[in-house]
Image (spheres, rainbow, N blue to C red):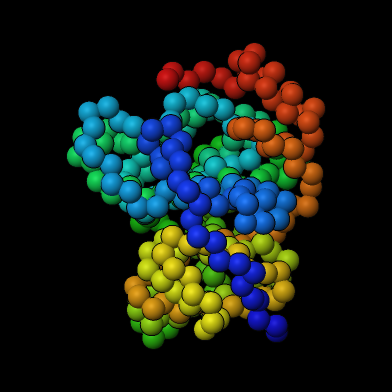
Length: 292
C-alpha cells in the first residue's frame, strides 16, 4: 500500500474570541486550502489552545445561538464547560469528556465555563468541531450524546507506547461510543516519548492531525509541533506518528459526503433557499426556547 503523505502543516491562525469564554484558532475553514469542501465532512475546527483564564464570579462563555444542518463535537482537554440546548440536552463537560450534539433540524444552544471552575480559574483547552450531516439527515430530530471519559473505549499500544482513545469509528478493531451519520474516525492518541502509532484509513477519507500536546513526527519525516495541524494528502492509506516528547494528538478521518454546501453563520445546508428557510424558522421561533 502507498504511504499517505503530508499535504501541509499549518501553524495556528491568529486567535480570536468566540463570546468571552473561548479563545480559538480557526483551522477549518481557513486560508490554508482547508475550506469546507476540501475538509468535508469536517466543516469547522476551532481549537482553543491552552489558555489561562483568571478566576471570575461571572462565568464566561457564549450566549444563546442557533444551529441547523450539522453536528457540534466539543472535546475537553482542560477546564469544564456547562451547556444547555432547547431540545432538553445539557450538562457539564469535564476534562476528557466529549459533547456530541446533533443540531439537525435546529436547536438553540449556550455554553459557559462551569461555575465552580470559573470561580477558581485555570488552564482551558478545548476543540470544537462541526461535522456535516448528509442531505437526507439535515432535518432529522436533534439528539445529544454525552460521552464521559471513563466510558471511552481504549486501545493499549504495543511496547508501552501509549493509548488510543476511540471516540468514534474504530482503531485496531475497537469501536468508539459515538454514533455517526457517515463514516468518521475520531481518536485521541496519547503517546509516551518515542512511542509510535500506525494508522490505516481509506485514501479518499479526509484526514487531519492536531498536536494538542507535545511534538510528533509523521512518517519519520514531517514534524508536527504543539498546536499545529497536519493535513494529510489523499494519496495513500497508511501513515505513522512517533512522539519526540510525551504527546497528545487528535486524529480525524472521515468520508466526504460530496454534496453541495451552502453555509451562512450557524446554518449549514445544501442550497441557498434552505438557508433562507433556516433563518425564517429561527426568526419564527421554530427552534424552541432557551433562556439566556
